Structures are given as C-alpha cells and as structure tokens.
Image (cartoon, rainbow, N blue to C red; front, side):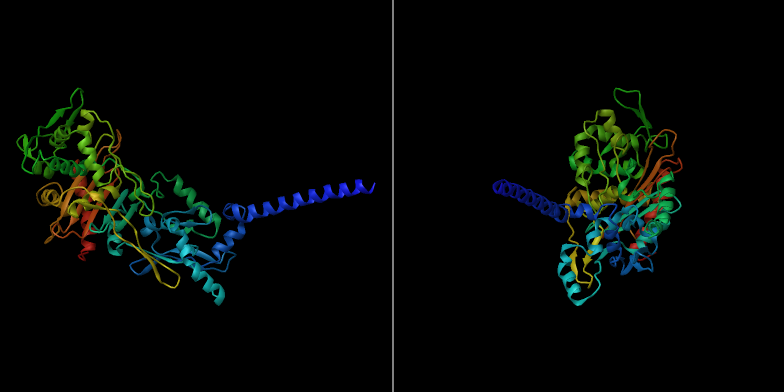
Length: 486
C-alpha cells in the first residue's frame, strides 16, 4: 500500500514538474521570442501609451523642425505635428495612431522614436539621471527655398517635382500635387484620422500617392537625352551626324505611323543629331533607336538608373526600360514611349548624371542623424551609382541641351546670365486622356548646382509646347531658388 502511494506521488511530482517546465518555457517564449509580436499587436494599448509617452525627435529642414512632438493633456502624452504639412508631406510622410507611418517617419522610425541601438548609452544615462527619454533627430537634405518653389509651381497642377544636387545625389526638392496634410492623419483622435484618411483614399487625384518617387510615367521626349547619350557612346554618331527627319515614318512590318508633333519634317527633312534634340524630332530619334537597337538603349538607360531600385531611404518605384523589344517597339522606346516608364526621381537622375560629367550619384534624403543630445551619429556619404558617359560625351550632351533652351523647345527655362541645359517632353498615357508633360534641366551648365525634373499629369494637348509652357517655368523657378535668384 505504501509502495503504491509513493508511486502515485512520484507520478504526480513528475507531472507537476513537466507542467512547471512547460509554464517556464511558455513564459520565455512570450517574453523573448514573441516579445516584438505582442508589443506590436493591435490589442496592446500599453505599448502605444508608452510610445506616445516619449517625445519623438524632430525632422529638420534648413535648421527648422518641420515635424515635431507637442505635449498634450490627454491619455497619450505627445502628438505629432507638422509645420507646413502639405509642403513637406512627400518627405516626412505621417505618423498615425491608426494608419502607422510613411515617409521619413517610417524609414527613420528607430531614430525618431529613440529606440535605435546607438542610443543605448543615452537611454541608460537618462534612466540613471531620472531624465525623460527622447527620440533623436533627422536632418534632411531639402533646400527650403527650392522646396517652396517646387511646391508653389506644381500646386495648381497634378504631378511631381524632384531636384538633385548633381555632385552628391542629395535631394534638394521633393514636391507633389495634390499633396496632403499629415496633421489630421497624425491626430491622437482616431475619428479625426479616419475621417481624413477616408476622404483622401476616395479622392480620384490620389493625394496620398508619393508622386515624386512612387509614380511612374512614360518619360516622352525627355528620354531622347538617354537616346542621344547612347548614340554618342556607340561611336557611330557625333553631334553633327545627319539623320533623315521626315514628317512621319511607317514602323517596319506594321501599319503604325510615327509622326513629329508639328506634323511637318524637321529642318528640310534631314537634321543633325544636335538639331534633332533641339527641336525634339520624333522621326529622327526613332530611326536612331532602330539603328542602335534595343540592347544599346537598355544598357544606356540602365547606366542612368533604369531597372534598378533606390532607397532614399523610402523605396522608390523602379523605372523601367523593357526587355526583348522588336524593331517598331524600339523606335517608340527611343522617344520615351511604348513601355518605357520613369519616376520624376529617375529623370532628375538622368539630368544630374549628364551634369556631373557623366557620373550618376545615388540619391539620398537624409543629411545626418543625431542623438537626443544633438551628437551627430551619422552623416551622409555621397555614393556613386556608376558612370553613364565619359566626361567628353557628357559635355557634348550638355552643349546640345543648352541649345534646347537657347534655341529650341525649352525657351521658358532660360535665365539671363545663366546657361541652362534642358529638355522638354510629352507622352500619351492612354487613349482619350490628355498627355503628360515633362521638363528636365540643370544649371549652371558650366558648374551645375542643381538638376530638376518636372512631371505634369494630363497636360493640355499642345505637343512639346506643353513641356515648355507648363513644366519649364517650374524647373526655372527651382533653379533660381537654388542659385539664390528667387
């Protein structure tokens, strides 16, 4: 009897031991392995309260905070606020209790929230000293004057503006229209955030779309700069090579007619490569494209950044030059049509690559990251993406683009006393819809300080005039702002 009882006790003890080990294992799983999952779970209000109880660091442009945290009297101690919210929305994004974060708020969240591993010593020091923890700050590369000029220029249209410092890749302007106000989305009142979000999502003009980096368009005739670069790099063309330029051509093996926007021949039916770029001659460039072939065009496009992904640090949409084109498709691609697609960022990179003596720089938006006590933890280091052109060929393309502004389709970008290099563009996106208009430029041509791309959706059907009439003045204003002439 005693032996039977002791056996039972042993079995109970073993069972209790197993249950204790299971409980211990579960506690470790919960506390260690699933800690992040549970902390981020929608039902964990303590995590939200803790996050909003810490002062989030500022996003800084030109020495001033464009995003900061304001103390409140509510259950959530701090609320995110944005100075000139729509002006900088393409860069800052929003930080929402309901919809999460976008833009720099998302890409640099660990720094802004103060949870970055580099702040470990700071957090320990704050704990010992009894100080309230704070987030770090992020300084952007944006030029306030250029950003304002870009935003003002595009605000009554639909589209995007991007400006780049050619020598570094630093983004000087990143503007969209329509834009949005991050403040209601970042409200601590969920109803306010939901009301604004619902209206924005329902808006057919898509104000929440980050047009400068996330929308792709047919680049139209601005792509002729890429085709020009490919022609010169092939060794078979020089700026003075003569090219047939009839009013229209029938693409090989098809019934498709490709015409000049004027409906007339360029020149007397034959133009130099330079003249073809200056007047934006479709038939001449289509024939250049067919002569070079799609592989040569693709290689040149990729040297400027097409078919590559860029994080600025927000991930930009990939601009694309398609593979395996037949001859008619290659003719259309050579003038930025068919399935060629580009972001405004990408076309600014094309202009910047030519401006920087043929070297394309990786674009970036964050200038430096600082700890809560303003110690600089990281400073941007400009990085080369690659060489798209030799310095000599880049100079030839520059001289040709200067003539576009001085004598050709880009006259509205002219600035007295400054040599501006530019290129207009127009692209049909869908039957029955007005075409998109483009302008890319850089200046001064002999010492480039800024490269700009302007993309306008649904411009009036004025051919290349649309790019000159609508987009070129915006690029001009941004250039003048950077050069201190605004």
